[in-house]
Image 1 (tube, helix red, strand yellow):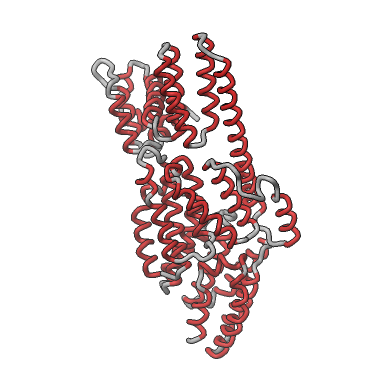
Image 2 (cartoon, rainbow, N blue to C red; image 1 turned 180 degrees about the horizontal axis):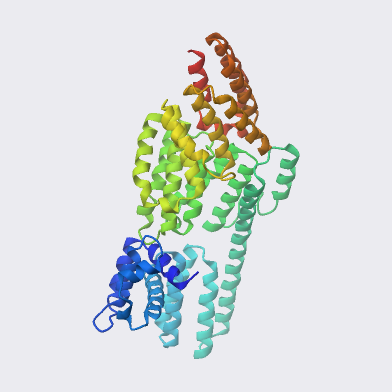
Length: 498
């Protein structure tokens, strides 16, 4: 990446508060009464995309005495220094790193009493947040200082290493559970869910080990968090929603008990809240679902402006709206959901450029399902077409829902002339996936017949038969995603009465 575009990308990534801080700091730097850094900063900030020609049109390069490249390079590093200072207290790790450096500086100045106070403060912080590795760094500093001052004792050495060994053991246990969690996430993403009984048996045997078969003996938050995360992933792979729901609730309760740990484990906290809804935890009700949404939307206020990065704000926005629309589909609350959709369209401009393809597809699918459930078929078709335009393999599970929904919408709009070719295309899509759900085969066969039916009575008979065929599928995990998003039974009931 060229340095010029790197500076552009860096400036464009800044939040309003970061820009304000940088400008205040940069205003101290002047050259012959001019602040060239701010001139360059503002000129780049006004560009919509990187274009060196347009940039040079906004400034007069001659003003910089042939040193424009050097000034831009200095500005780049000045911004990085400002960001480092601005975010110095925005996370536990940054705070601890700052305190360790301060303790070292104080020690080098022979201000040992002050250094020891900072060390004690940092050790307390590290214990509270399970940063076991900091104990070793702090004890090393105390040991080196003790030898330099010739004040170290045999008892000090024993104490330092006992603490270091204890910290190493705690860190090892934490890493053991972290490793299991990472392995299970990888297996789920790469191999998917397990339905085959023989595969399930092998999988259970592989993970029935000392670290996973029982709850950890450690009281450390991180250890218990990774243990519960592992159990959730384990249950997801085995499609055990009842056990999985127990562990998800325990993990959320763990965070509720240790609210101070949300900021430094935000990804895992969001994961727990997300899975609670997306996996439809056993026994979930609307009150619980709404509580989860409140927890998600309140995160920025809860942990503070500086503690939450832009990419995390984007992630919160995406998770919030996917779950908001998903909850509306689960509880068939279409009218309220349409108001949420309008709110989403008004607010999405803040983060739209950073949306992931997966999020775009999920929202388009959810919104299409909402409009379909509300009987607004033309609006549903608009969002469905947007979802259909995504490249293959973006999210096969979501695309499967969209494909079925597309046929339903065209049936409701009376587009029976083009439906036969669309049914054929959809059938080919599912055949190529080699993962054809039972519902898909039954639905396609039914729709082919109902399109050809000549009388209302013939259609009613076909709808009755279709209903009997699909009711037994509602307890099947592999069919449930589709049934949650599209209220097939209500659609059948409405049409069989016509």
